Every structure is written in C-alpha cells, then in structure tokens.
Length: 167
Image 1: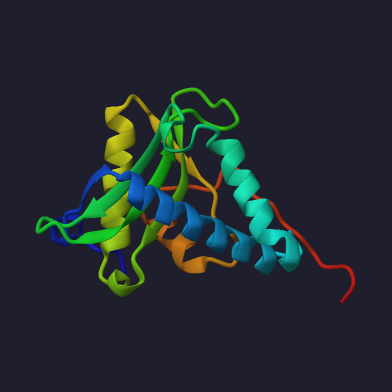
Image 2: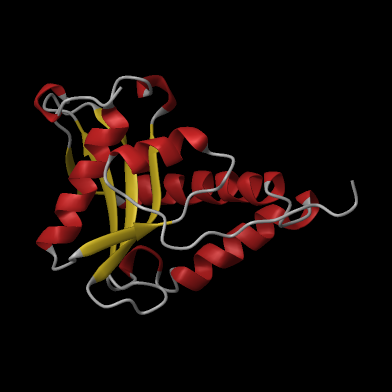
C-alpha cells in the first residue's frame, strides 16, 4: 500500500560531519562487500578490500571529492534517520542526472515510512543543485528497496541478469 505524502514524516538533510563520514565509510565498505558476495560477484576473502578500493576510486579526495553530497537525514526534532550519498555528476556521463550511490535508514528506524521521506529529501537536495533526474542501482536480492523505488516513481532503465550454469 502506498503511503500518502501528506502523512509521511518529514525528513530534512544536512551535510555529514567528518566523524560521521569516517564511520559511514567503514559501514559502507562492509555492506557493499556483503552485497557483492551475496550476488556472487566477488569472493568473500577479497570483498572488503575490493569494496574499499571501489570507494577510494569514486572518492579520491574523500569527503572533499567534488560534486558529491554526503547527507544525514533527520526528523524535525533532530533525530537521525539515516544517510545518503549522491553524486551530482553521473558516473556514465548522463547529462543533468545525479546518481544515488547509497541510502540507508538506521536499522532501529526502519518500517516507519522514513525511507521514502529520506529518499524524497535526497531528491530535493539533488534538484536544488541542478539535477533534473536521479538514477540508482539496486541489487536484485533487495526487493524491499526495489519496491520503495518503484512506488516512489523510479523505473527500470537497464537490467543485469544472471543464470548460474553449474547447478
């Protein structure tokens, strides 16, 4: 059931602090490594190092990398909800299209409609900085996230598929 925007908890975003960024970078690499292993893309013993290398490639200047937004979502009372990482320059050069690299609602805040509100706040932040579209990637095993994106107006523009042949 789609949640009415009128009843959605309002979430605003602010820039991450350097300490928040450092903590998030560690969590991001660990989560990305797990997703890549679960998808069958990387062997477990290499995954964390490969995830860290991938992040370092995307963020050569860390938090100071140009055209990157590192945001913390908060409710009106200042309670943290989660975080977003948005690149204002699309990784494949799509004009006027930002790219959502990461969005996550804090585990203790999930299931209350805050993901949709956090996504909307990130979209607004990208729009305010000139983006006319926002693209993202979602792992096929993450049906909950895929459903959130579909019901938030996102559509599939490319799709990678795989069949295991050793079964």
